[in-house]
Length: 151
Image: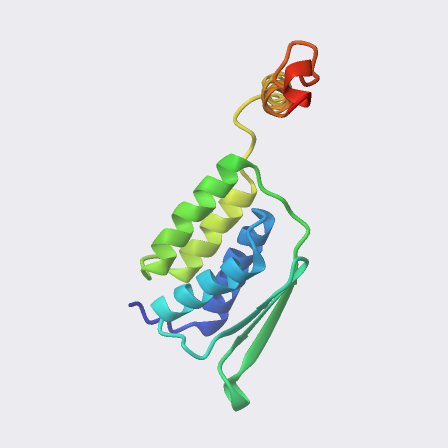
């Protein structure tokens, strides 16, 4: 477990992790569960999260020292960004990431350029779509065979 002195930085880090998970299209229940585990790793049992599909609210502390942070989510991540985000989350779950460094890493993940150009990405989407079509209608004509509809 890691103790963090600057609670504002930790709050921004937790908010950024939750925003990233939301951009990765993770379920709100899983985001809340993960954020609570990360907060515990940083000795913040007094942290509460409200996660909705388009907004995240983080409250740290209570009474006079309590603070609330709100973030609206509009981003979506590619698979390479999602993989990098979850590697960061695994380190954060163990309290191994300094929150300020974690914020820098989150910014780097958000700013990652696509690994391939538009032509390769378009070809990849075409292959994926073809594969899904074959799963749904696995015949050369793209429609079910007469023998499968007679069942």
